[in-house]
Length: 244
Image 1: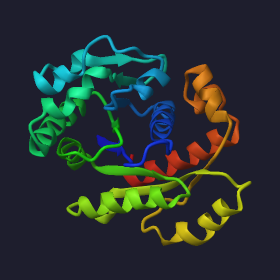
Image 2 (image 1 turned 90 degrees about the vertical axis):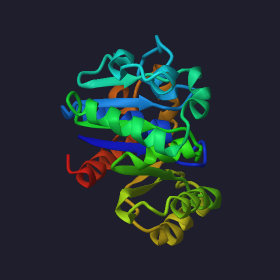
Image 3 (image 1 turned 60 degrees about the horizontal axis):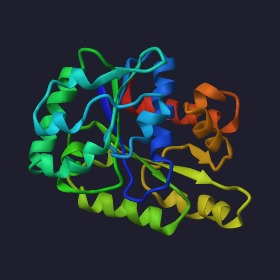
């Protein structure tokens, strides 16, 4: 089994959108997939049509069996460990990064009996507890939009998490608006300087709003739009990196 964290310090870069669409594509390819939603706002949970029926904080604070918190979605081969507002206490519930790493590693080990892929939607924070989570996964997928702040946030993460091997980082370009000359220049001049960048670009698209209206991954509800095609390309690149 492979564990993939979707993480970015900068918010609003399509982190959750990427997580749920990759999960839906993996499941459609018959890869048994779990989305572990660690963001208190629960956007990934909501987009997959699930409502949390228990407080996930108990997994971390009380060591409750993780299987009790997993819910099925309407999609074959795709389940969710739902997020809820109790995760606001996540950093209080877990003592330090060592405890977070151990809890996550133990959970991943148990989940390997049921799943081939776990996708963890992380909040845009870099606390010791989140650092512990990141230490437990195989790869970290990082969406980077055409902005200085987005690159700076990625570089800060790489600098701080210097124990990670370079190959564990999987940055990719997202929210490219080709109507903007600045975005085109960024893609042509700046993007190639980002080490390990996946050969995929996710464009800015109004279809993302439709995904919210329909409360479903775009690859499931509107599979033929350009945004869906871009996510299919991203999934193939990620799948190759993970050797699934």
